[in-house]
Length: 327
Image (cartoon, rainbow, N blue to C red; front, side, top):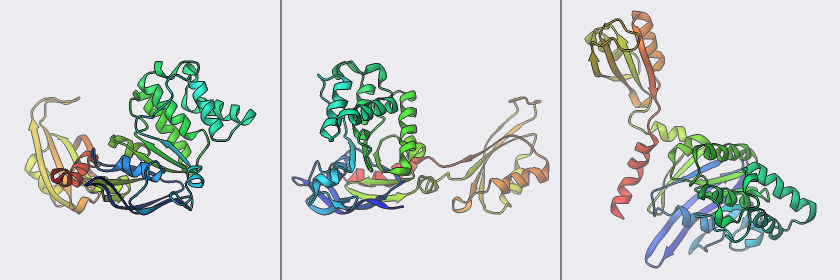
């Protein structure tokens, strides 16, 4: 994958406040980078510097090999940017705004018409083309903002909360569009929705108090959760002590916890007691196969077997809470 965005030792102050403190990372073509952090962590400031809307106090940003400070026009031609709040010309219709956007991007005639039409279709704006933007819902305004960011088919997309204000169906459509564009672009996506990281991101960078505190794949983040790869096992008609002893002896198992037992019939049951166990692995390793083998060998009746990936919310809090406490 070719590198399209490089950020080196970025620093930005607002008076005495250091909003961005030595941030460095790169994004390659084909990557969708989720840029995460609590409110005030420096996400939007970093994105504004990357896109040239703010100048850095120190550090360097290059887009497609072009320095954003030394060659801003060349760098910005490669960028599509959806800022927070998506400022739009509210008195324009959707069609007029997109035609204006196409014109200032240098398109005219049939090429302008084609790009506007293609973008309208991709972002599903047909029903509001002739409406003034000020009359649109928050979700449609967000989609108009997204449309202007992709109209010129940029190599780099910087999206600040792209699904903010969208209903579940609209979120699905936008996430599908991001996945469809991803192989040809480098995409930086800021979000508060951790589900979005699982849905579209190939990598996640977490920033707190202006500094990067984590950089890795979504799966690597899940692996940092306390309950990662824990197995929940629901058995019927099995004695607790014997089950716990057998499972605790399985390879890779650190501990077995009883979540409770009851004598109800349960789902399709026959009145035999239901036993609920949680099997905790060593060092987050996968033990579902070992647990299943124990179950088969003993012929236990299984009501349920599930594997916990680990909650991103828990990982996020554990990484960012100390910095938030100090700020």
